Length: 244
Image 1: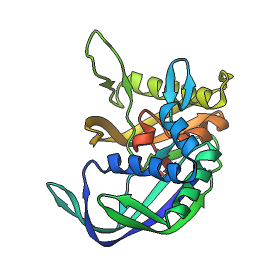
Image 2: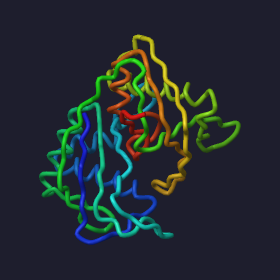
Image 3: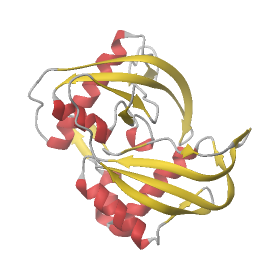
C-alpha cells in the first residue's frame, strides 16, 4: 500500500543534501506516536529470512516545486510531494494514525512541516512487460571480503546488477511471507541509468535512477512496487512507479 503526501513549510527552508537521514528518523517517530511496540519491533527486529533483516518500507525522493542550489543543499524550498509505501498493512495504518496524533505535522530539518494532503495510491495492474521508472535511486551491492571490508556497489551495465536485484527481491518476499518462493517465472531489465551519490547516516551510497521492465510472476511485481527494489529501501532507495 502506498501513500502520497503534499508537504508545506511555513517559511522557505534549506533542504540538506543528506535529507534522507532526517526523513528516516521522522518515519520512526511517526510510527512511535501511534504504535510504539510496532515501531520498536520494526526498528530492532524487522522481517527476517536466513540471517537477512528487512524493514520492508520504501519512500521516494522529495519532489520539489521550486528550489535553488547551494553548498549546504537545496534552498528556498516550501512545497514538496513525497511517497511512502509498504506491503505491511500495519505500517500504513500506524503511519496514518501517527500523523493524526502529531496534528498532521512532521518534524524535519529543525522545522515543522505541514501535511496539506494525503492520498492512497493504488497498486497498478502489473501485466507482463510493464515499464517503471525510479522515484528514488536504486542501490545494489555485494560483499567480497577479499576485495573490501565495505559493500561493493554494482553498476547497471554489470550482469551481476540484475542478478543481485532479482535475488534481493525474492529474499525480501520470502522474509515477508515467511515461506520459500515457489520459483515462478520472473525477469527484469534496466536501461538509461543515471548515477547519484547519496549520503545517508554518514555513509555515501552509490545509486542509480533508471528505467526498468519486469515480467512474469505478477505477485512479485506488485511486491517490488510496494516494498522497493535493491538495498536500503527504508533509507529512501529503490522506489518505482509506472512510466516509460
